[in-house]
Structures are given as structure tokens and as C-alpha cells.
Length: 159
Image (cartoon, rainbow, N blue to C red; front, side, top):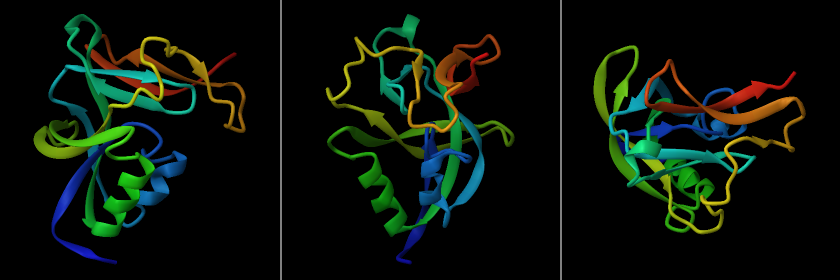
């Protein structure tokens, strides 16, 4: 491991969250808490395989985003995350404020924000099937959390 002088905090909202396939990249990192973005100028959409978050100028269509905060002490982990997220091409890593839900404290953390035209937000569906998942009855879909302006994007079972 290539340890950092000071740990960095990362906010994850999709396949990097605990229980999802890419969380393995954070196995040498410490889970801190569930969190919500302090800013509510984000919009999340799903392309069917994973969610994407970007900043929005339309405050009627933007929300706070809920996810998880991890403390990362290893430079190699950051490089792995940057590679996964195509930092600088498909996403930009930006630092924003997040509220730790159980600790009621604000931390600065990195979030990957979508910047590419690879997937068009204007044509992307809010409800899309994840065909690579072994359970074809799961839908990756956004929804409002507890009647707030906070958008979640989670697996839901179709019956």
C-alpha cells in the first residue's frame, strides 16, 4: 500500500456502495457513515447499469443525493477509483460538503460527477432494467427519500 499523509474522504452513491460489486475497490478503506449531499443542486439518473450524478441548474429537478462516506488512506485506492470512474473523461472528481446522517456532522468529500456525452441525460430513462444482474426481477430506479428533496437510486424488486 502507498499510504497518504492525510486520509481523503469519498462519497459513493452507486456500485461503489456496500453490497454492490465495485465496493471491493474500497476494501482497504474505512466506512464512515451514510451521508447526504449538503447541496441540493444535483440530479441523478440511471442508464440501466449504474447511476450518474451531475450538477443541475434546474432547481425544480435537482435534489440532495444519499450515499456512503469512506475514509481512504491509500493512494492506489484513489487511482483505482479514478480509473473505474474514468476521471477526467466520463466523470470529474470534485470536492463537496456532505452531512453524515448518523453523526450529524459535515465533512468535505470527493464525489464523481458525470461530465461526458457518452450517455445523454436527455434520453436516459429514470427506470431501467439491469440486465447483467443475476436476478432479472430487480430494477435500478430513483425515488424521493422520505418525502424530501433527496433523490435515491436503489435496487427495487419487480413483482
